Amino acid sequence: MSVQSSDKTLSRKQRLQEKQRRQLAVVDTVDKAEAKARKAEIELAVAVTEAVQVFGDEQSASEGLDMPVEAIRRFLGMAQDEAASADTVAEAVGKS
Image (cartoon, rainbow, N blue to C red; front, side, top):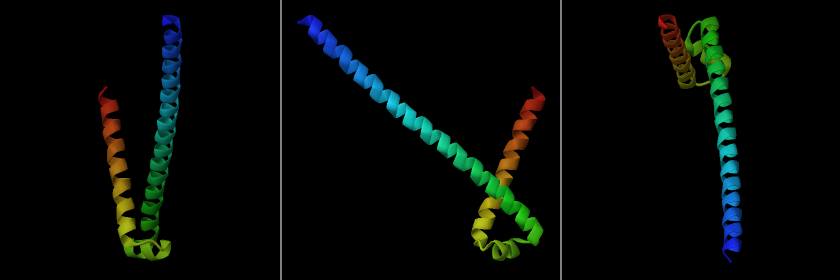
């Protein structure tokens, strides 16, 4: 009898390990998708920043891009944050 319950325990353990493996695979997929979305959002922020420079100001860019001024400002802020973050990393690497 102890052999059977050992087999059942092993089987249960294997099922739990497989369930955990699938869960981790899903988490990994979501993490990768979030990273791609973040990268795309940063690229859009850079493009919006360039558009503001081309159009001359936020209002003109808003009209030219058919995008609310609030969205333009949000993307400008993201681009500034990204640039500041890159500067911080560059400084840290330079000090190493």
